[in-house]
Length: 301
Image (cartoon, rainbow, N blue to C red):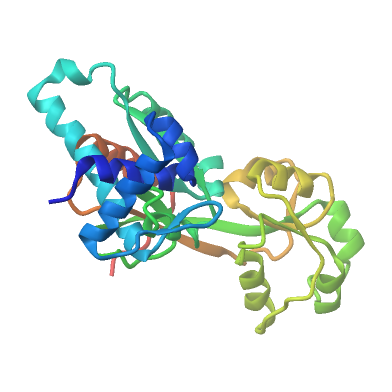
């Protein structure tokens, strides 16, 4: 049977990235932290941590971290059922990973509902939708919005719908850089606005337009959805925006579509535990309902 004190010490080291910081949080010596981690690793015959700066879990450690997070939520659920008054003032830390464009559009509806739940202390981790699953695998979060349709063992991938992206620029930018349309040379010369270096959506868009990969074009990286939109509005570049986010700008002719009718669909899934504690069941319900009420839905097969 796993020792709970050792498990919480291990989780603290992972969450704080340091033996020293974990010791301070747990109010014990660094030596005590090291002894607990060694005892846990010995009991499992596995190395759980990479002793680097910051300290990170090994693949075995990632599996154990997911177990600790599940254990915390299950314990909270049991205490709520058995001794309801014991949990009235205690909030359970819950971390979920969300892509920035969802947060800037439909997810905000779910977020305010989640924050009304007084039994959780929410940490929202923002990452590219193609990479949020990495956070789940590492045990950093207990749920995520992802483009991956396949769930890990013990998890379920709930379809949410798809976000629609179109390519936009100001009329002035388009007249200056694309007087003859989105030609290859013009695309190589004109600055594009992307979210960050993980963002492959613009590359996918250009490949769809030209039929081959286009890599060496001018790029601005602005990792905030509203800032990215503002850059396009100010004529600093052109780029892909969620159609819902750009709707008002198009209606006022502040932005125009560079390739009318050319839509990039990003299908999203909510990855959750197969067996969820009650507090997380409610979160899942809120997220799924908000998405399906807002996002375009895939046709039934």
